[in-house]
Amino acid sequence: MTTGASSTKVQYDLRAAKQVERRMLIDAFQILAVGGFPIRDYEYCGMGAIYFVDFAMLHRHLGMEHLFSAEEDKGSYKRAAFNCPYSSVKVENVTIGDLVKRRPTGKDRIVWLDFDQVMGAAHLEDIRQTTSLLSPGSILLVTLDAEWPESAESVVGVKEYYQSVADTFAASLPVDWYHRSEVHRACASIILQTVESGLNGSGLHFERLFYFTYADGHLMVSVGGMICDDDCRKRLRLTGIHRSPYVRTDWQAAPCHIEVPKLTRKERMYLDGHMPAGESFRPEPFDLPEQDLRHYKEIYRFMPSYGELYL
Image (tube, rainbow, N blue to C red):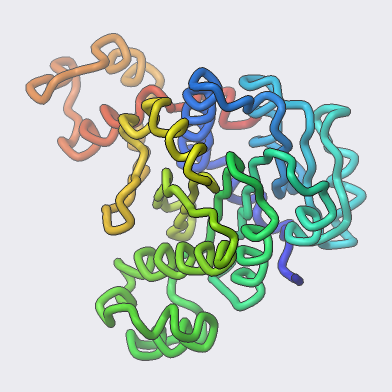
């Protein structure tokens, strides 16, 4: 496995949409913890770059102490190691796939393959091999750039690119899914099929929980869920996590699209004072586009404060 953390991913880490995604995930992990999954004791394997925002949130909000970050680039490794926020975070100069491979088998873990590139064959190999190493109760998250590859100039070219990367997984998808506005559907489907192939013959299955899209410079897509045996699946359903508004269990469902409206601090304070709000609510003191109001109603609980944008 050759794909790893890129230092360029830091450009996304200070964006509000990414922070909302992280907060939704933290909320989900808290629900799982209350429901009997010992999230606090899980290992976390991710790609912290130099900001380690997800690592800091997992430690602060969930008490997780077994945190491992992959930094593939030798030139960035020393800086990444220096910027570790806590002694419990360990940085290794390896790919994310090799980091997971090195960890002991049978351990419950959360793994976030947080790539900032368009899907490539090496990404899929990381996904497939990582999946094969995870035990029941473990959580896998995959994030990829869902824009057209630079080499493609048409829908046909995009489909040819993904077929060259994902072979039969991509060939079976509708051509419409390769339009600019729909590529995230192709990416999500290929990710899910790759996860299933990693579980082939294990007797385990993947319970999808997350399907996010958001634009942080580029359109990004995140797919995630839990590796389950029959007992784990029953326990998962008893947690009630499926009732969370950001959860997507249906493989054909539309994504939870994270759109962060541009608001002043005063506007946010006013809106927060009226949340949760029904369909009829309108902010009387100022004009706000209906679409922005709708988006805010959906994500206000997960919006970071201004200071947290620079965590």
